[in-house]
Every structure is written in C-alpha cells, then in structure tokens.
Length: 235
Image 1 (cartoon, rainbow, N blue to C red):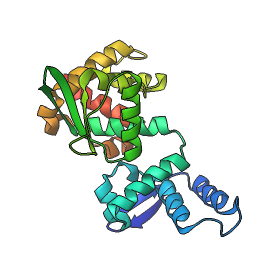
Image 2: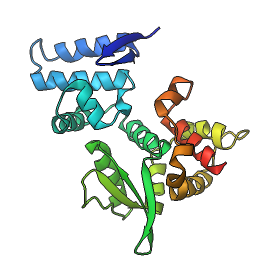
Image 3: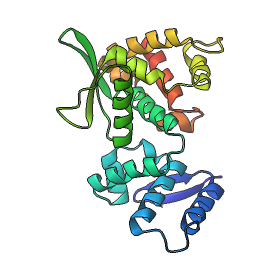
Image 4: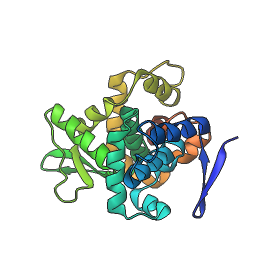
C-alpha cells in the first residue's frame, strides 16, 4: 500500500518510497553534508515530489497554490530541475503532450492556407524541446503572441510527436485503437492522430479523458489515455 502525503486539501500517493529516501540521502551527502544550498534543496524536493506522485499532471497555477510558491519562481525551478535531473526526459515530454491532447486542451483552425493546432505549454523545458524539434525538421512554432501558447502546423506537430513514441508505446496504443493487432503502424497512427487533432476540439466535453483517473484504473501511461480519447473520437 502506498504511503499517503496530505498537502493542502489534497492527498498524494507516494510511489517507490525506498528509492525516494535513497535519492534524498544521495543528493544530500555525495558532496558533503551541508553542501546543498536552499535553492538546491527546493529543486531536489520538487523533483522528487513530481517524480513520486502524479502531481506533475497539475497545471502550473495549481502547483503554485499547492506548494505556496510564486508561479514565476516555480516555473524557473522546474526548468532547472529538468536540466539537473534529466532522467527520462523523452518520456516526460511524451507524457505531458499526451495528457494535454487526451484532455483535448487544444484547438485547430485554418490560417493563411495552413491547418494550425494551438495549445498552451506552461512547462518551459517541454516548450523548448518542441521548438527545437520543429527547427530540426525545418519548421517553426509561433509563440510570439504569448510565450506559453504555441501555434504549430498540423503535419509538423504530428511529425514531432511521433519522435517521442517508442515501440512499447505503439503496442500499448494498439490495445485501444486496433484490438487484435500487436502494434499500430506509424503511418496509421499518424493518420488517426491527424484526424483527431483536426476535429476533436469541437467534441471536447464528449471525448476528453481524465489522465489521472485513467492511470489509477490501470492505464500504463498517458499515451494510453490519448489513444482512449482518439478511439472515442473515431467512434
């Protein structure tokens, strides 16, 4: 049974308690006791809190209220945290984007002959990774109006997101989108995902998936929650 951490009006389940305890000791002692600054300690605690609970799914403003830290300071801490404790950053970006799309927190529209997808990414690290990926394929995202809001061409977004999906992800997605098949071909997933991004916003209330609830009831990752939303849209 997971240990529960009460925080404010909420309660969080702590996963892998032994790993968490060892991480604290390792970071606190490896350069000598007392070597961590106050900021180092705050970033370490934030890292472990987000790693060992499902709090990473919360919007920045909710985390800010929960942790009683100003949003701007928290955002900077989270960016430094991702650089200092990279872990599996590929999986992290995948899960943040999957959760966003599963909850249908985006809109799609035509502008100047191109189909655009617009969504908000509060996490500076994720935003920078997306923009870097776009540059890598010769595309660009427009964040000029608001630094947290990205506007990206539909085809480019599908191409970038595919970079974060692994073979196990596609096998997990197949259980939802193509039951009976071991995996979903990349081209087929891209086609289904593209159609989903085009039209899902108009049916957000009907097809959005609560990622935290899905994981709690057996979902293996946010990608499965996204596949569930896509299956609802496909009908």
